[in-house]
Length: 403
Image 1 (cartoon, rainbow, N blue to C red):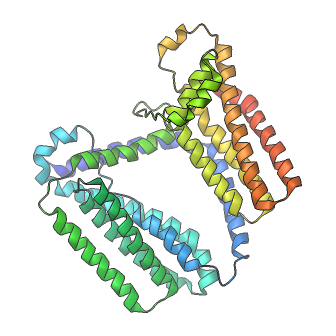
Image 2: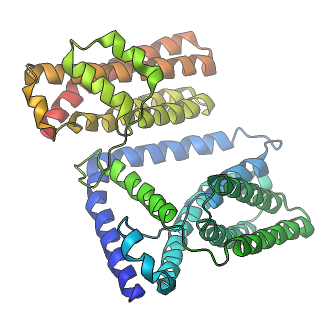
């Protein structure tokens, strides 16, 4: 059993998968949107910083955000379902494999920390009145704490009790948050020392708790499967992904929507049912609505709110276009006595309803945030017009190319 060769083979396959689907995700069309969002975000972030007062809880905000970054993540093992059978007998020989998996994960997390630290640097330097050198030391400390988190996360993977795994996440988040808070607030060293001592004791406790236990193969494979499915779900918005596993959620509380449509509108009923229950469409819709709504509410600039609402409507519409291809492999749907034009019409009607509901939600949030009724009416009118134009102009042409 050559575990190093096994890791090399798995790693090459993983990079191939990422490269294959990344070229579809980061196409020229979407790159422009990303650049626009980043540029607009940076501009309004700088404008927002100028409105802050010295009483703003900078340390608390950084503690929560960086605490989440430090706590999130688990070891990228690249394990597969068949490993539960074929690698189980050689578990004791896999230490080099998991060592490389740990180092690979740590390198990825360094990029995440770098991005988060770069984003929060202007806030820290302005509010805390410190030098760049002081912030570099904080980032170095974050790297050390991230390594601790990964060590604990690896020990946690031996546990089989889900409640203990959830408790571990909460404990690490509290430790991470307090550590960042004490660093940013420049509290006496004794406070930081106490947190570090607690971290060491907790790691030792976890090590002793799982000492001698076999690997929790089911948990490791499930975690790896979740990571790969995230990649595949994103890529599936742009290209067919054969490896994507379909998930179905019952969501009984949304059955009234289907009852309103009725089964006479064949494809409208089918696509609505698919949107509400299959894949990750409804979850994606709710996440984008939530993120867009939060940004819309808190961004302190009137025209910035207007741009945010349009951008998130575009993102929702663009990503839900993949719903059109969801049933492409089900040949029995061709037996429906419904022509192709009716199918297209029903799909566009659903997509238009989804975007119009999003427009109403964003308009309500805009009205609550600004209390400017004239601009609220303008935002509502423009959002509805954009939704209709996107669906029946861009969307209609796009799904013709997806056939």
